[in-house]
Length: 274
Ligand code: HPA
Image (cartoon, rainbow, N blue to C red; front, side, top):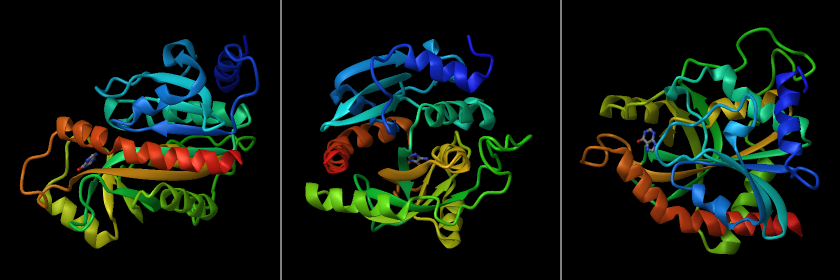
């Protein structure tokens, strides 16, 4: 067995596949996990079978890597993701992304459930992430830098790939799914925000707030992967909705809107396959 942890994870994944690993990985956020069950010719590998993959403990997030085809395009889905608020060190979220890079992946497509900072973007809306603000005070790249993986100081000026964002918009239009674009603010969680925090994030330039995505984007950009992200708006942020927020509401709303996200993803993969 390889002693390099990235190689050990990559080897464990390859050992379960007949052919090459896909060029694109889709990370499924809260309530979006069932999309992985729509892949054709799928092979599912529980995270527990891949050395170094952190195990998700959140309700609504199973933990499997599902590899198959979406609309003819080979795709790998992370069905279930890890969050900083579960107690995972930011750095431990790096290994899966780096293993994908080692397997030849070029693109990481992230999805998340998020609260809206704008009354005009209500539950069920889909937002293409154009940029982010990291308010977690954590960074998976803290510590010694391995120059073979990526540079110490790396550029984040176009972290969310402009061409992929345009492709997602075109796919949404083709599928008849309304989308807008905006800035995603990541907080550490696990609590929902206070109304004062929501007002502050709006002033900072945010459009949506959530508890994931930024660590994966940082690790992926560090190692040269292209990144795109979609936020599924499950609720108005605290104080905007006029009622208390709950994880149950997040899961329920994500489940309701998951159909339009699936249509958008299908149209995106169909276009990438052709
Ligand atoms: N805040 C943070 N994360 C979230 C929210 C929210 O309002 N909704 C879904 N994920």
